[in-house]
Image (cartoon, rainbow, N blue to C red; front, top):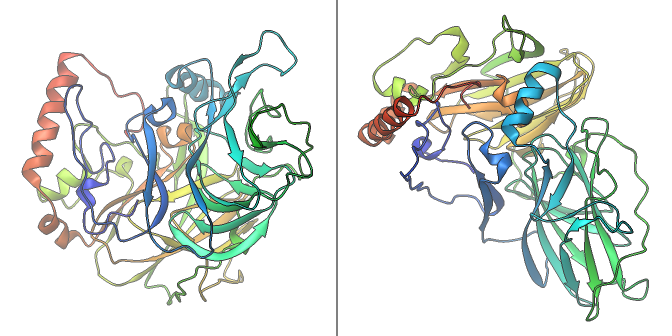
Length: 443
């Protein structure tokens, strides 16, 4: 959610605030300058992937008509261990294989013909001739989904919070943190009474024991039966929808005033734990000393481990190339901006790469391809301390992030230092009382 001149309400521990102590509360207030579908989630440790999240719908125009709004449909991975236990595995052995997945918080565990199966599937009634809007959110810690509904086509009308020219597909790719608004028309009652809605983890970048069993049911009529429908053919891959995304509100990207190249690598630290690095720096920030607080006390220099880049001037165009030689794709999320996707590709970025500057896709989360590059652009039109990070939960906790301090001189004028200090004082007392140790990057 873009915080426009409300950086302090971005909600990122160790960046724009201290964590909220147990028993305390914070009210986030911002002006809704966007419309569409999004979500809120904890940005402290890995809490978001243990259930501290929810949907946000801001009403506004849609690029295609529909009859009923079914609201947010969350796609989550799930495991029988806690995320903290899984993080210990990720740090020592690499990404763990997860047990299952959920569609809007529910699913079964075990095969349909197995008496030991537990849980319940989400069921959604369809009425013939009705078109339904669904607001898909990938809230997984480490799963790239392909989403489909057997026999039905999907009309995509928005990516993240950016309305796009409608396009029709049978399957939508969602990497972690991304949102897509789709319209489905109920026109298949003659083919069957019930159909599988599928969220399929892509084994090319996601490890899950229940690959073929993360499903919900859409049905026609008065009763739900177990579907016998067959899913669409697909190629197991971790892709973005970039080529299909044409924003309704057309914008042109100007030439770069500031540019940088960030190389993503992974390695073990002195304790033998995996850390991710951008330009040889693995981000580490202190819960009790957020970067915004440092700005408000006049700091102008930061430690290398804070991974700070300064963008001091207003209304300048920033080009950032993120590149990796590793065979792992990464969902790159930038706070405070919808960025423009100028290019994505395999191999090493060079000046010969064609950049799309005429109404390119724009969004807040895009995929850095495995062994490839992502070229991002945005304008410095929003003062604040903005985090950019990989949206794979393990990777963010292992330091895959940068901070951009944008228009430093204007940040104090839009911030409430007293409120920030009060929250940090409460947190520090709580942390000291209960001897809470920070074991991750801070974000």
